[in-house]
Image (cartoon, rainbow, N blue to C red; front, top):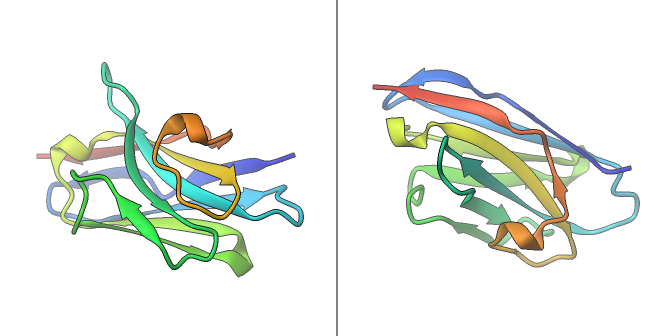
Length: 124
């Protein structure tokens, strides 16, 4: 059974940094691309970043480009999101996601596996 577990969220001041982790388990002999989405209260789920199976191709949402970095360590079955220069508008629940296959996917509908989410709060 596939399981995704996020960690590393919390409260940080504007301009600060946080690093989210997502540990994946249950993908026995499967290739999978991964992504991060976020959802703020009263808003739709928003694409943040995605990475392919090989880890050599990434894509970012416009609101986080140049501030966030997605990467993965396949040997550890773990994906990360390094978030720098955080802004109050980055406040949201962040979700780790995964989809079978090697290619990047950009919409929530393309992901079949989700973590439970983790809160990130940026104070002004």
